[in-house]
Image (tube, rainbow, N blue to C red):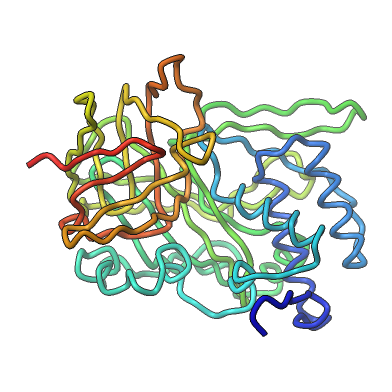
Length: 348
């Protein structure tokens, strides 16, 4: 019924609760909340599911806002309200990784640009998991890969059950890594990675996305990747396999300019720029609000996957702008883009 709340107890069978437990463990590792809040949410949620939190939480920090931050907020909302909206579909439905991260309407465009070509779709064998590469997007600077990790033995299935879920990582993104002591004297691993990762368990597989931005544009680049899980002691990560992927530029980049003459670069899946003034609209971090106007005059709101989390100067100027999307645009059809309250018109 329209407007009626849908409660977990009415739509989720007991056998499905494990999926939420595993997902919430991942949220706890990737959210941008403080450690105490993360632990409180995780402990309460696992308690409701009949489980105990008996291991340390691993803290993984990124330079930019992780897409998993959205998941953490959703998890907290579910815990507090008991209600499930459309956001829970990813736990229940069966979709490809590109459906999940770019939407079903983007599939034809992904195929036409080569982001889902037969040269890209492949399987990499790692310990306990087969990694199925499904999409690779590269605009010369920002690269994104989506993949799924399917356990092929009991050890892999046990890793999933234990909450040690696999995720993609590139060693190129390491900024700092260290192990620190908590107030209780426990070891806690902290890392800062210049990458964005997302992963969750769904229907017998781990659904994964990695986004990384190069320092300098290139038309072709080979990137080292590794499939990681939490170490058994919970104080770091363990590699299940290392491999390489070659990214070939398959997305054009167009220049857009605001009324100050400052420029940004738009590709099918991202926006980048330097020293750009962006005014706030509804969100206090305007980089989370993106809208494009098409050549036919229609507008579309863009779902932001991640964005620069740095503070602007007193004039609202951002030294570095990086925004990635949960959309895949036909940029030939984009005439302008609005970020926050600032409009950028296409040049040329």
